[in-house]
Image (cartoon, rainbow, N blue to C red):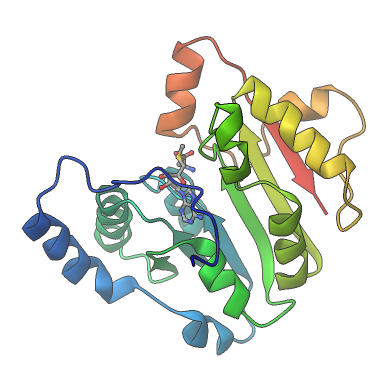
Length: 216
Ligand SMILES: C[S@@+](CC[C@H](N)C(=O)[O-])C[C@H]1O[C@@H](n2cnc3c(N)ncnc32)[C@H](O)[C@@H]1O
């Protein structure tokens, strides 16, 4: 039995034949790390992104904060290839990849090792029978809490109305984190480091607003 119910859409290699997927795997392998690698990192803040997509945010942040280490977790081969290409083109040595379910990496990390976990525009799983696949749930927040440093943060963004409500409910039914918001405007305000991703541009074009959720 699978350890975690997949939170990503199956058949992530659509549009790619077996050979192409193998070629990508071979190439991106250069930047792939495991928990043993991350657990040996010392004196450096570590940021993990769960579901990096094409890498818009992680590449932007890696350039902004060269002293921090960024782990991009993604399962979609084309997306992994994009992050790999952008990191190598820009000579970014502080970007690494994990190409399986991010929770498999997280569970093997030393406790209190991360300073920030990003979950930006997670797959919304809009049908009720799929809600259990949504990555933001009690167990995931418990895992995040365990792996974050004392003052560590989780940052979530979503443009999906029913997922916004779902996330609010998950947060209100846990006591690991405090929601960092004083007023409604805090949910609609981008953080200073924000960069618009491909998924957000699509949401904006389709008239959907983004909620920004910071937990500490
Ligand atoms: C809707 S996309 C958003 C990508 C990116 N954050 C952005 O804003 O452009 C969600 C991504 O999360 C990835 N994903 C979902 N669950 C994951 C998991 N458990 N581990 C790693 N990646 C995951 C999917 O493959 C997908 O590419």
